[in-house]
Structures are given as C-alpha cells and as structure tokens.
Amino acid sequence: MSDSTQTGSGAAAQSADSKRRPARWLNRTVFGIGLASLFSDWSHEIATAVLPAFLATLGAGAAWLGLIEGLSDGLSSFAKMGSGYYTDRLARRKPIAVIGYVITGLATASFGLASAAWHILVARACAWLGRGVRTPVRKALLAAAVTPETYGRAFGFERMMDTCGAIVGPASAVVLLAAVNHHYPTLFAWTLVPGLLAAVLMAFVVVEKERQPVKHVSFGESLRALPKPFRKFLLAVGLFGAGDFAHTLLILLATQRLTPTLGAARAASVAVGLYLLHNVLYAAFAFVAGWLADRFDKRRLLAGGYALAAVMAAAIIALPVSVWTLALVFAVGGIYVAVEETLEDSLCAELVGEAHHGMAFGTLATVNGVGDFLSSVVVGALWTWVGTAVAFGYSAVLFVAGAWLVLRVRAPEE
Image 1 (cartoon, rainbow, N blue to C red):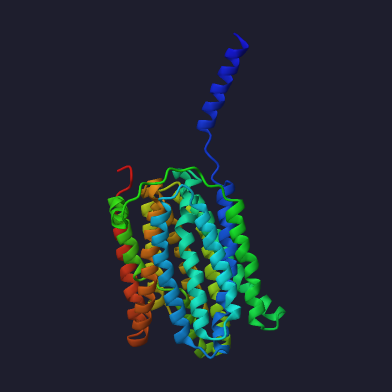
Image 2: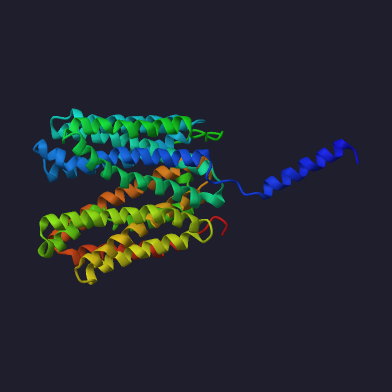
C-alpha cells in the first residue's frame, strides 16, 4: 500500500472519529458568557442590596422603590423583544451584547451621583435598558456555541454562574459598606470593577460563530414566523408567569410570620439567611436541571418545575409557621426557579431555528417580564386585601395550569 493511500485512510479515520466524538459543551464561549453573567450580576446585586437604605437617606420610601423597580423591569422587558428582533438581522450580534454590558455597568455606578430619588429612577432605567438589550443576544450566542444535544448543560451553567453573582453581590455589599464607612458614592463606584469586567469578558473571551442574517421583514411578520409549538410554549410560560411572584415577597412573608416569636430584628436576619439558602440552591440546581434536560424530555422536566412551584405555594398556605417550614418553602422556591429558568431557555432554543433565536429569546423574556410585573402586583394586592391563603392559592392554580399546558407543547420531532 502506498504512503499516500495510508495517509488518506488515516485522514478518513480521523474524520470519522471526530464525527463520533461529541463536541465539548464547556468551550471558550460558554465559559466566557458564564463569567460575564457572574460579574455583571455581582455588580448590580451590590447596588440592589443597598438601594433601599440609600433611598432612605434621600428621603424616599417604599413607593419610590416600587416605581423604580417596576418601571425598570417593564423597560427591560420590551428592550429584550426589540433587541431580539433587530439582532437576528445582523451578521454579528456580539457588539450589541458588549454595549449592553457597558451601559449596565456605567449606569449602576452612576447611582453614586444621585441627590434625589428621580436620579436613581433614571439611572436604574438606563441600567435595565442595557440589561434588556444584551439578554437575547447573550442567549443566542450561547445557543450557537453548542449543539442542540447540550443546550441544557450550557444554559444550566450560565444560570448557575449568574446566581453565584447574586450570592457574592450582597455579601460584597456588606463588606464594602463597612470598608467605605457607609459612603454610598464610593460603594457604587466599586460596582464598576465587576460590571466593566463583564463587558471585557464578552468582548475578548466570547467567540461569535459566523452566521447568515435573516432577511428584513416587519416585526409582526417576525412574530408570525415563530413556530406554532413555540407560540403554545409562550402561552404556558405566560400562564405560569402570571402567578410567579417575585421571591422578595418570601422575605416579607418570613419576616412577618417570625416577628411574633423572634422579634423584628431577629426575624429580618433569619429571613435574609433563608433567602441566601434560596439562592445557593438555585445556583446548585441550575446545572443539575441542565444536565437532566440533555437526557430527558424537556417538556416533562419543565412541567415538573412548574408543579414544584405549586407545591411551594401549597406549603405556604398549609404548613404551620416555623423556621424549618419556611426553610422548606425557600428551598423548594430556589430549586423550582433553577428548573424553570434553565428549561425555559433550553426548550426555547430547541423549538426555534437558530436563525431566529434572537427574536425567540427576546419574546420569551418579554413574556416573562410582563408575567413578573403582573404576578407581583396581583399577589401583593390579594395578600393585602384578602390574605395569604387567597394570594398564594391564586399562584398555585396558575402554576398547575402552566404545567398542564407545557405538557401539550409538541416536540420538534413530533
């Protein structure tokens, strides 16, 4: 046999081996996006942790805090849809993500320049606008960096890293407050370090795959182009989201229920500790959920996460008050959010072709954002006017309905 024949045979064998060998899911891009999520969340969680206290120094109370959070979340939600629609038409998406990280980092640090509550409102709205612009782009870049068989692990890893930032951020805020002697402008300036580092990671570590941009069509046509199973999936997400209240309400619940036995100060400390438990379990189970998503039916796993949320709501209503029962509520809450967020992103990537991932992720984020706003307002109002049993019973019904509907979403191969 000639050398050239042997060489050809060897090349063919290597090619066959490479096809059989599964692609690495934890590649440079996935790792870079995970680190960017960690540092960005670290940055704005420092600011979020001290924001109520800082607003108090400006003479602003709960009404201003609610307005700031509500307006910022609403603006972010619609920015996500607009960004998703626009970036599908670009050959390169990554610069949009880098700009979004820079805007969020600079706007968060600018809290330190505020001398009135409306200054914080403007700064937070700008920060969340940048966050909204970058979110669907980041998810599209992540989906493009891995194979469909590893979507779950990739999105689970990103959620895990993001939540690590949510754990480190408040802890850093406590340390920084002491270090700068409660001088808030200096503390907010320190948020620039992790915030801009996130932008650097996105710019220089993440590698964008070459892609063919989709042709220009109207926004309405882009929505109609999304597959029917995906639209049904969005309905399930919206139904579940209408009951999926912000988990800061769990902190309030724990504080109120434990105050009669522990006192106000001790109850508040325990409630914060329980929320830390919530976030630790969220970070831990995000990757577990992603690993499972790559091996089992994503629809059934997501429905299980939605059903777990109903278990949490039922536990709030039915279980006697104690630190241990509340710990169970917070633990289940952290686990189901990990499953929900990881599986929603993974299933979204699976149901829609890669060319339209920007629009799909933007639409999903907008539906979630509207649901977050609606659920927290409704649950808070029902809690105030009727009581916790009705408020969390409302959530439980929608959680079960969302689980039932997501099971009826047709898989792509069906």
